[in-house]
Structures are given as structure tokens and as C-alpha cells.
Image (cartoon, rainbow, N blue to C red; front, side):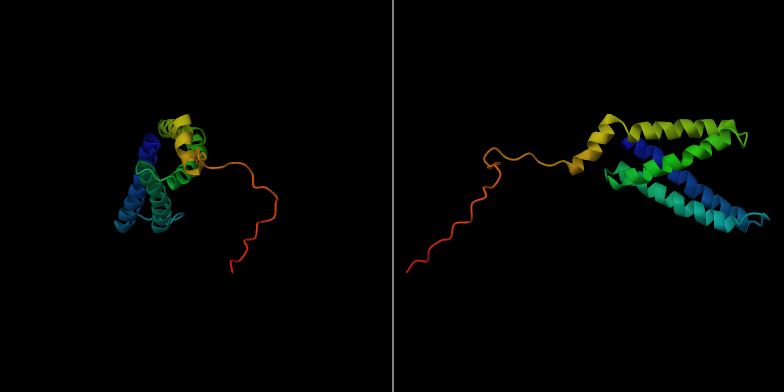
Length: 146
């Protein structure tokens, strides 16, 4: 899980870094007619911040980070394929795809699944505890002492 946490943390850092770069670029006067630099930066900051939080959670052993990590990897798979094919940027899409698959393999490895399921494990009963089902007899009423 720590490897997956490191990968997801790096993804979050890159997304937040891209948001900062977009804000700086917008402040320096670069304008696009079809896109808002500040809006896109906010989008990257919010989503990247969430991914970063999920990655840090995995690094520190918190199970809730796994859901964020899995969703982020699955949502980025079409992006990697689009970069490889439609955008004609295989030098970016191919490494991204390899990283995403590596993270998913780490997130769904047997040891990761065992770690994640440990939170939901039911403790076996102790040896001295009666595990027989309760009988259907009516409860015994105690007599009052006079």
C-alpha cells in the first residue's frame, strides 16, 4: 500500500503543481479565448488536492485513502489512452498508463487486499465463551426473598 500511496501522492503533487503553474501563467498575462486559466487551475487544485490527501492517507496507513486512489486511477485511464491515440502524445500517455496500471496493481495486490480487509475482520470467539445458540426456554424468574 505504501508504493501505491507514493504513486498517488506524486500524482496529487503534480496536479497541484499544474494548478499553481496555471495561476502563475494567467497572472503573467497569458490569455486563452476558449479556456479560463483560473477556472482550470481551481479544478486541478481541488481534484489534485483530493488525490494528494488520498495518497498521504495511504502513506500513513489510513484505509479511506484507498477509495480515492482507486477512483483517481480509473478516471485517469481514458486520459492516458486519449493522450496515446487521439492527442498523438504517446510520450506522455504511455508512461502515464504504465504508472496507472502499476498503482492499480499495488492497490489490488493480495497483501493490499488483506490489509484493507483487516479492518472488517471479526475476532474469533475466545475458548472460554459458550458459542452455543441461546435456548428457547423462557427466562427463569427469581423468587423474592421474604
